[in-house]
Amino acid sequence: MSLSPDPQSQTPTQPPTEAREGTHLAMALVGLAAGLSFWILAEVLPDVIGTGRLLLWLACVALAGFAAFLALSGPARMRQAGLAALILALPLSGLVLLASLRYDDPRAFVQSGYWFGAYLIVLYPGMSFLAAAFARPGGASDPALLFDAAWTILLRLLVGVAFAALVWGVVLLSGELFQLVGIGVIDWLLDRDAVPWALTGLALGLGLSVAHDLRAYLSPLPALRLLRLLAPVLLVVIAVFLLALPLRGLGGLFGRLSPALLLMAVAAGAVTVISAAADRDPAGEGRAFLLRRSAMGLSLLLVPLTGLAVWAIALRVAQYGWTPTRLAGLLCALLLAAYGLIYAGAVLRGTWGAGVRQGNRWLALAVMGVAVLWLSPLLNAEALSARSQAARLLKAETLEPDMPLAELAFDWGRPGRAALERIVAARGADDPLGARIAAVLAAPDRRDALALQRGADREARLAQLEDILPLRPEGTRLPEGVLDRSGEWQIDSWAEACNRRDPAGRPGCVLIEVPFQPDLAQPQYAMLTDTGTGILALRYVLEDGQLKVRGPLLLAGEGGQPGLTRADLAAAQDGGFAITPLQRNALTLGGRQLVPNN
Image (cartoon, rainbow, N blue to C red; front, side, top):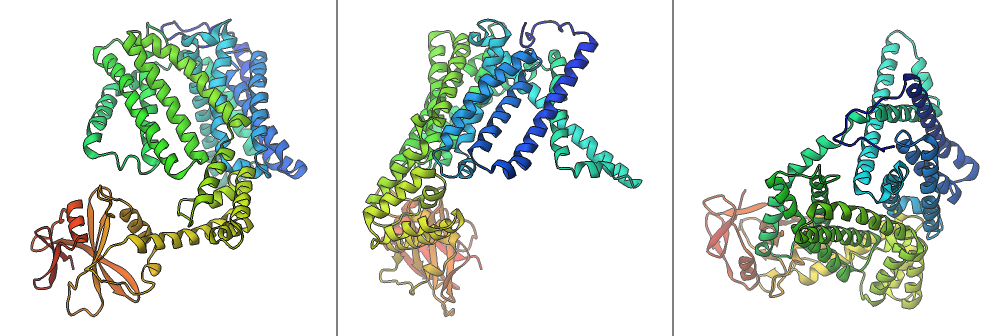
C-alpha cells in the first residue's frame, strides 16, 4: 500500500462510503480523546499529582503519541499508526524526562525551552520514517517514499489545523447569531472547561481524516513548482552577497550572533529550494536549464555561506564562551554546512539530483541523531555552557555586561547554580565580583536576579565608557556623574560605538565641546559615533546635569548630511578640527563646516 499518491498517478480508487464514514468517526473520536487528554493534563492532573516530572512525561507522551497517531492514521491502518505512535512517543518522552534531571524544578526545565526544539526535530522526521517503513518493507530507505511521507504528513496537518480553525469560526459566529435572539447555549457550552479542548481535538481528527480522502488533491507539486522558481533569485542574492562581502569587510558580520542566524536562515531556505528542485525521483526532477543550473549553483554556494555562519558563531564563542543558544546555533550551522558539502559533492560528481535525494535521507537521520544527543547526557548543553562561563568568571577582574549570571542561576539548571557556587567559593566573599554573584544566587527569582545584573551591567558599561570615550579639546572634562544620569539607550549606543575600533585601535566615538551658540550658558558638545553604517554627528547640551540631544549636525549653508568617515573621526580624536564663527559657531572638520539644525 502506498503511503501517498505518486504525483504522476491517477486518482486512487475510493473505499466504500460506509468505510469512509467509519474512518471519519474513528478519527474524530481519537481527536476528541486527544483534546480531553490535554485538558486533563493542563487543568486536572496538576492539582492531583503536581507539576513534577510525571506530569512532564505524560504530557510529552500525549503530544508525541497523539500527533503521530493522528498524522499516520489513514496512510497506515489505525493499528499500525498506534504502534508507530508508541515506538516514537515512549523513547522520545523518556529522553525528555532524562534531560529534565538537569534541573531541580521541572518547571524551570520546561520554561528554559532548550529541549523543545530537539523534541520536535525528532518527532516530525521520526513520523516520516515510520510512515515510510509501514508503507512497505524497506520503505524507510527509499528517498522517494520518505519525500512523499514528509509532504503528506505536513499537508494533512495543515488541512486539519485549517479545518479546526474553520469549525471554531462557525461555532463563534453561531454563538453571536444565537445571542441576537437570546439563546446562550453555545456560550454556556464554551464556558465548560473541557469543551474547547474537546471541540478542537474532534475537529482536528475529523479534518485529518477528510484530508486523507482528498490525498489525490493534496499533492505537493504546486508548492514544489513554486519553490523551484526561487532558485535563480536566491542564487543571485547569495552570489552578490558573497562577492560584496570582502569589499564591505567582515567586521559587521562577526560582531554579533544575529548575522549568523540570518546566514543560517538563508542557507535553510536554499536547502529547501534545492530539495524542491531535486524532487522525489528522477522523473520529477527539474529539467528547465535555468532552474536546474540555478539549483546546482546554489548547491555550490551553500559551502561558503554556511562556512561563514560557522565561523561567525565560532568567533563569538571564542570571545564570550559557550551558552546553550550558541551551542544550538553552532550545531545548526554545522548541519547546514553538511548539507552544503553533500550537495556540492553531488554537483562535482555529476550526480546532483540523486545525490541531493540520498543526502537528504542521511542528513535527516543526522539531524535526528543530534537532537537525540541534545536530550541525552552525552550532550549536556547546560553543563558545557556553565563550565565555559565559570572559566570566564574565574579569570575576570570585573563583571562584563555580557556575562550571563541570571541565566546561570535560573535558566541552566543544576550545572549553572553549581558553577556559580564554585566561583563564589573560589573568589571569596570579600571579592567584589564574588559578592555580586552571591547576590544573584540569593535572589528569590529570575526577575530580581536580572535587576541585580542590569545594575551591575550598567556600572560596568559606564566604567568602560568613561575609560574609552575621547573628550576634545584636550583637557575637556565632564562634570561628575553626567554619564551616570544618561538613559540606557544612550549608554548602550555610545558604548557600542566606542567599541568599534579602527585598525589603529582608536575607538569609534569622540565628544567635542563646541560653543555652537556662544550666548548659551550651558556647555554644548558634538558627539561623533560610528554606527556601523556611517558616522553619526549629534549636538548635545548639558542641562540639569544631563547630556540632552538637540538634533543632528548638518552642513553649513547646505543643510545636508555631512557624510563623515572614520578618517574624519580619527582626525577629530587627533585634534584636527577648528571652531569656526559663522552667524553662530561651526565645527570645521575635514574641510566641512557642521552646524546644528536648530
